[in-house]
Image (tube, rainbow over all chains, first blue to last red; front, side, top):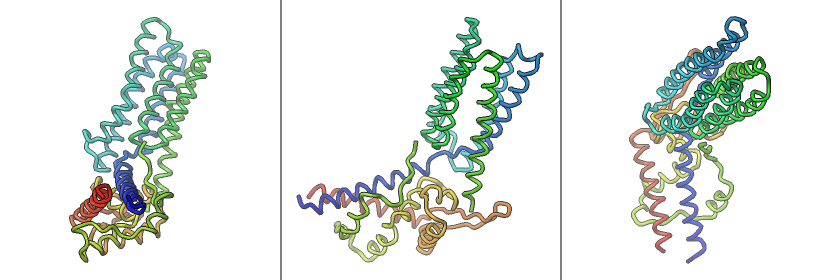
Length: 197
Length: 128
């Protein structure tokens, strides 16, 4: 076989790969900064509520309510963004995002139930931060790299959450689900704002 | 994680310069030759490929996708617009100008022709 024939063949294959990469990149879901900001605000409110003496004994219930509320708000904002991008709810990118998020969140829900049942509430904050971080890292596949960085930060925050006393554990929850979400949302929002033309 | 398509491939670019256009049966007409010049370019091919899977993309989204400068993207998009391969709707988002691009029927047909051409090149060379 002639050498130039092989080069031509590989060049055509590289062109096809480029076309595929362009299509995959265009089909990537954009995470809106507003989702992070909304979820972060819910987290900060929950953190502040659990610092009050009246609600501190009920921190688990407060944080579970906050989780449901934040998931609802974040989901709505994400769904709106997906619709703006022209994705349908059952389209491949949205389906991939849900599939990537689900295992980590499901494991978190099951472990919460197990730990609550065994009375081992001390391990719940660390488990939440760790598994939510894992879910975010997985969810970065159909979204953006910034989501993976956020997931890694949640994972890192899980370590002190396992080691600290309960009052400080609640602060790590606020730092993660409140401050980290908020900072991420502002960062994404500023970056998107900078790209507008 | 979806990889960002690089508009300038490291290994393929020098080879592409050395290579002569592929001679594939059924693709030697004047229309194909002008088509190749327009769509063969990396950024323009990327824009058309991205618009093939998304109903519309804004200028800023395309810029982020291909990591190119405003001027570079404008020039490529204008060429595609002049060929009527993409349409551009200029609006305002508040006070900010916003350009929204869509692939036209002619653009989709052109992309399909290009894909057929590339596949034919692969078949022809692998069959040789």
